Image (cartoon, rainbow, N blue to C red; front, side, top):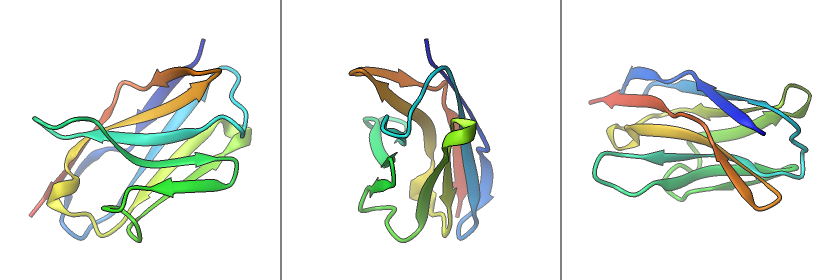
Length: 114
């Protein structure tokens, strides 16, 4: 069983930065994808960024502003978010997939004020 615990959300002004962390318990290998999704009120959950091994993938809306990284020794994935915009406001969820089984964190709120 895998558990994901996010931290680092909060309130920030537009143009500011936040760093999200997601610590995973259980056996996760670098070949297992880890990533971040977000869900704003009234909208579907959408992909923000994923990392598998050293390969990264970003939503177009965050390219150049967000950076995903992972520390395999700590089973932790990070999301550095710079130049935040009000439209980045959402609940951010950590994600992994192990043997086609998805796992989700409880979510952390990110609010960007204009």
